[in-house]
Length: 203
Image (cartoon, rainbow, N blue to C red; front, top):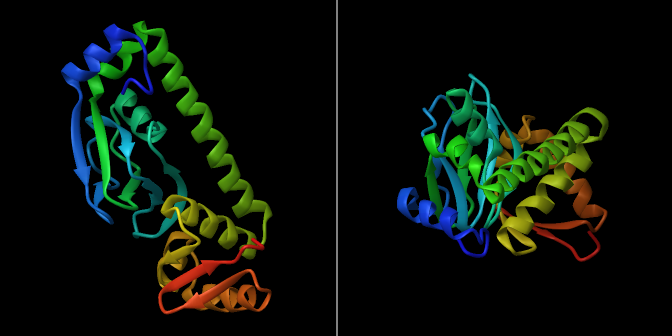
């Protein structure tokens, strides 16, 4: 945690109250309706955050990388609301769990307050990008953005994913995704394999 914070008193409190947890690849940290009693800070690995409605339909929001935390979880803790998101581990992910009652108490530490405010700012910007893609862009731009984010999270241009999984997280039909991916392949933007998609250098 010293790479994130430098205040010795804050670090001492984090070490006292924080708990670590390992979530295996594809494991769930949080689902809609869960009571949120902690805020997760990613120590290693990557979390994928999705919005899920009552019917189980999903839409990808953003990734959390080492040193980052979830604004949605912070908001739920502060408002004592249940989770409205789904958090999935892209790979084996080590987390530091901060109890909800510590979130506001630690605002007395300037570093913590700055960290939380910066988290809100960054996540808000990412959510605006998602909204812009949905409202103002063609589906091909949405798919490309999604694949680029998954590629970044995986640290590889090869993404192991099905067309159905993409359709689920972009809230559309598999047939539409398959047609679009074939068109993108013809444009030399990507290469399709069996449950794999490789983003080409030109993208």
